[in-house]
Image 1 (tube, rainbow, N blue to C red):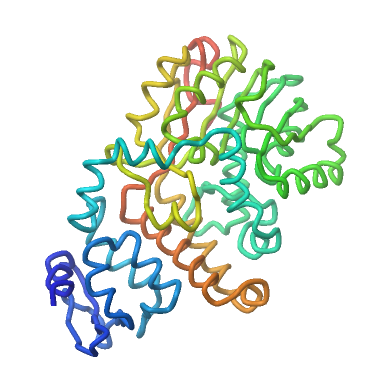
Image 2: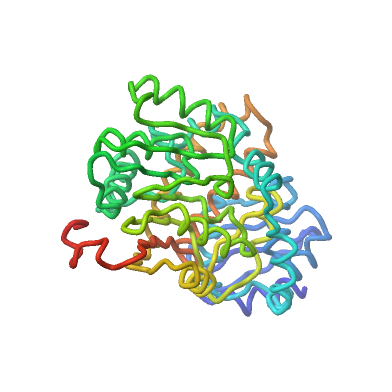
Amino acid sequence: MYLANYLNKLIKEDGFILLDANLNNYVIGNPKKQNPIKLKLLDKSLHYKLLLYPDLFLGEAYSNGSAVIENGTLTEFLDIALKNVGRDETSIFSELLNKLRGTYRFLTNFNLVKKSRSNVAHHYDISEDLYELFLDSKKQYSCAYFKNENDDLETAQTNKIKHIIKKLNLKPNQRILDIGSGWGSLANEIAIQSQCEVVGITLSENQLEYSKKKAKELNLENQVEFRLIDYRQLDEKFDRIVSVGMLEHVGRKFYKDYFNQVSNLLNDDGIALIHTIGSANPPRDPQPWITKYIFPGGYTPSLSEVAKPIENSGLVISDIEVLKMHYYHTLRHWRERFLGKKGRVLEMFDERFFRMWEFYLSSCEMTFKWGHQVVFQFQLTKKFTSIPTTRDYIY
């Protein structure tokens, strides 16, 4: 069987049992467990689909139930698979796609204002109740900051907010812009801790409604304003700009526009903090299953893809921090919480949706553990005199 032969070339550490749709068993790699994890295929077409394009078809097969994991969990299976794949491509076809990546990314990342809004709604306007099942109490849907890997999610997300606020080096009465403000927790915390005026912008109607309600509950209505608007439509000045988990939705074609706009909106002595998922590898096409089912229009940039538009915008990179295992731990907490609320998820959606989101959380978790995904935190200024000489103000 070609698929089994290919997998045996790929899997060198640990292993699993492959049961094909013809009920043939194959030992893949060198399984460590006495009763190894089993990947059971119920559809014969997967014999070649998983060989040609596993990046797309494995997620589809798991979601619709034609690929089943036995003697273990999906996360345990992906842990074995991605530990062996690492930062490499998963198939010959994936390598071919990356040779055509320039055209592919241009076609799939054409995020104009109207398209950006529909892309955001696809993911963030599914259901408020869904996100409350696995996020922390402040509903932060981005990488937490684990000072200790045993930190709980609430502590780590609070750490993240504090870490970002320190990097912004805020002064009282400054005007702050939060691009992609989500459910408003960062904007609200900045207002509470700094006595600054904060404007948060989002393209999600659900998030906007929630953010306004929360600001009112916290008596921040006169200090925090939330708007439903695209960042390209703003024409104001701010002392500080922060953007957490939004650059992933900009699209490669629009990095120039994005950083030019950050520069236009930022005062000459201002500071911007851009927090984004990125790739430690050279530029490549978006992960096809994630693009199709989870984040349409999404793209996680390589460092080389954002460095040039930042430089050309008139901004300077005053600090870069690379976080990796922090997001692995964040996703681990999200996955555990999500799986623990399976009954509630099935009440709201169906089995396919549950399996699809299990695959989303588990595959992202393992990609941060073993693969090329990282988080970049860029601190940007227009002149180096805008920041202190050392990093003492951060740490």
